[in-house]
Image 1 (cartoon, rainbow, N blue to C red):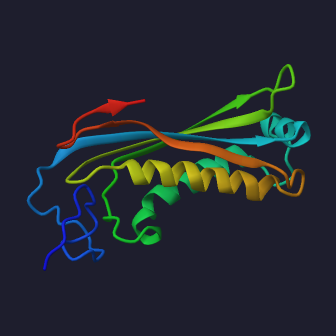
Image 2: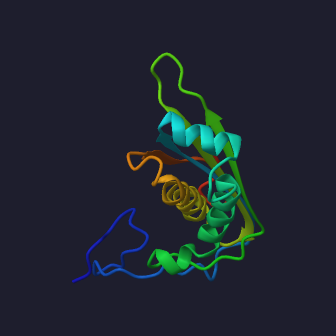
Length: 165
């Protein structure tokens, strides 16, 4: 007897995990934007912002790591299709803590391609790997940093259409 798994695209009729077949899907322009934050102490934040960290330009290294993360997404996440990304862009915004707020870095990733499946996972992975890289490079100065609020902000293209939050 075959079970129904309405809405779960990575589960077959028998409840078993499988890779979605995108063979017959149209190639369309697709893009996704994701963001996340890492909060840190004033000392770590100042070193990062002023580019005075002993390990070098940590934001540039995190940018490269995020791009690599997006490119390696299908190696990290089971059943995720390997994609020919045409663009991966990471941007960082330093947000000074004022009035008791935390110092934090906003990480935003844009991924684009012409393909048969979306790039949300690649954008999320880019943000996550960039945040982990910042954590790794700054942990000697601040081992109490926090990574938070990683989410997809928008998606364009494909059968399900465009959306943003």
